[in-house]
Amino acid sequence: MKCARGGEFSKGELQRFGNIEMNPSAGVLNYGQGLFEGLKAYRKEDGNILLFRPEENAERMRSGAERMCMPSPTVEQFVEAVKATVLANRRWVPPPGKGSLYIRPLLMGSGAVLGLAPAPEYTFLIYVSPVGNYFKEGVAPIHLVVEHELHRATPGGTGGVKTIGNYAAVLKAQSAAKAKGYSDVLYLDCVNKKYLEEVSSCNIFVVKDNVIFTPAIKGTILPGITRKSIIDVARSQGFQVEERHVAVDELLDADEVFCTGTAVVVSPVGSITYMGKRVSYRDGGVGVVSQQLYSVLTRLQMGLIEDKMDWTVELR
Ligand code: PMP
Image (cartoon, rainbow, N blue to C red; front, side, top):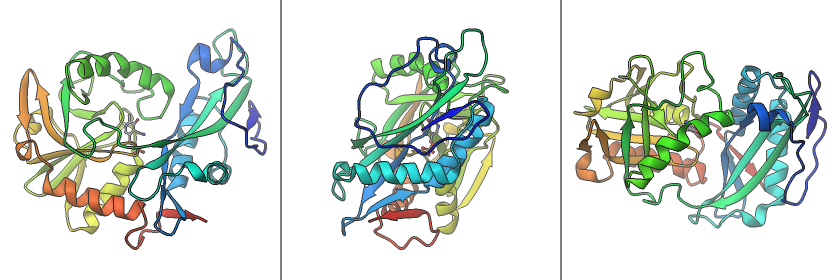
């Protein structure tokens, strides 16, 4: 789908996956004017396909577009385009229990612009790919390292929106961590260098004495849809959940830590290395709270339990 600056997106069309043409001075290539989203489709036992809260992705793209001076599709256009793309690719949705179809909506300044300014034209497209587990550990606990030098977001910056440049910012720390055998990096706030922010592509939760806490959303953390859903699921399961500043020292005596995201779902954290010291949780195994929340969320996403929240969208 295409749109001129200040205009509205026209009706889209389905195209075979392949390279796209791009003007060398496109806004996205030169000034990083791009946003993306990520959601998944699961196949149910009866063959139907479930999407999880696609309108939340649409809303997040709309608020990101505002920050990035871009027009964006309406919620309805976004959700309809996701549905049409998934249905056209339904044979790529893995069988139940064998993974999911990852859906990647992309919005970019595709028009040519030489001096720094928002692009004159925008493109919205969606591509899909079947996926399995995000981390090589599978559903086994992951190992994080706290990053002390590099930051993914600054106050007043773009950390709270899903813009492409945020991911360029994490590549260096993430690659270094992976080379040392860690699964991913845990970032701290760049002002106090003391409060937890998030992991390169997921949000973080800490459990202590059966109370669950997670860093509050304040512009430098992506408002994860899984995060928001897990907060509701945990409360509905009787847990107390707090959104607040979480100091890195609180990791030292936490009972359990887990990450949430579309790709990682709910990933238990087996250990965190902080200032060279490795802290293990639940003896490096899967924590009971993480296991319980993982189980409820995934069964909901796969249509194995009743969707009382009305979060899933079924495609036949
Ligand atoms: N933080 C970052 C930086 C991410 O890229 C993601 C993945 N979108 C998340 C958190 C989790 O967000 P969600 O649950 O919406 O996938």
